[in-house]
Image (tube, rainbow, N blue to C red):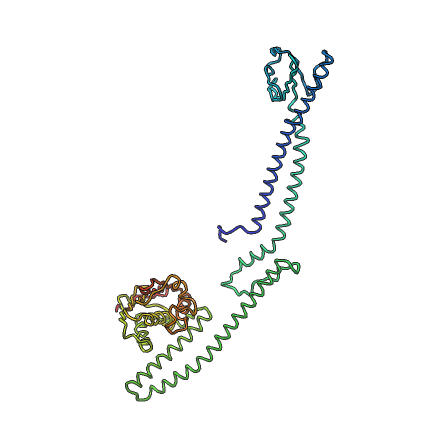
Length: 435
């Protein structure tokens, strides 16, 4: 599996679950902090402010009214001179604030009436306890419940998509290149009638069935074509052999020889085309093919059907090239490219060059635009409609090259001709004899 591939559905569900928990935790912590802030800034302030007001009202009616003094609340009453107060409580501003007193952090509330000042000290621990029991504990319980619900949602979601994930894993691990698609077991994917998994499995099963039917039709066509084409070609070949026994001279003799050569190539071509239809190479028909010699034969055949007198065809044989392949496949690839070069080059030259592993055929035709280069191997595509042909030649060239593992490269610009290079790779068997 590609490490850079997009995360699967279950992985994305886990990420969503973790993100959900993180957001819940953040919201809970923010809630606890807000509750603590509210308890200190509002509730405690209101309580201390109310306590101070109550004291001053009673003090006004009774100068001897005692200052508040409880388990959680200490009070100090002093005049303008605050030197009598303990250290840490002197010169405090009016209102609520935090102070350090006897090593503890307390909440102080200072209020004045006339020349008297009341300082109330409230134990911070009490506020913390209130915040813990009435804030942290309830929110923690809510958090645990939300965690549990989120995890349950994750498990149910994972369970819901698990069949789809298993179907994807089954298809991913199935080697379609080495096994028949009929071997893909989709019957184990069951579920409710309208479940997505069952719908996908049924759709895939129907697709495989239709693909197999299409493949079977192609195989039947190949069988019938093989039978129907080979018989008349064999008759033609036998008739030519009989004609060859006659004492023919000059043009009749040359015509019979051309027919015999064309018939033999037609038989090889039919075998190769049927072989390509089955998308496999037949190793029993591989032979050592001398590419320059084959090109010489192809040039003679093309000259008989395509006018080439206006062209300058230069065959550079500086490098010998011998490959292991069926001769018909070489003739398909090189023959179609040479024929197109002759058809599309109205005047100028065609140059054929070799390296130890490739052949390059360069013409001075109209050239190809970027769009034409992209589509030139598409079936039925023709650059110029004025040139006769079915548009299948280069498509067949590409299919043949792919079958044998050869590569084909095009260098072309509009108005500056085209150069086709075929690299034969592992099919090259040796350098042959220098020519």
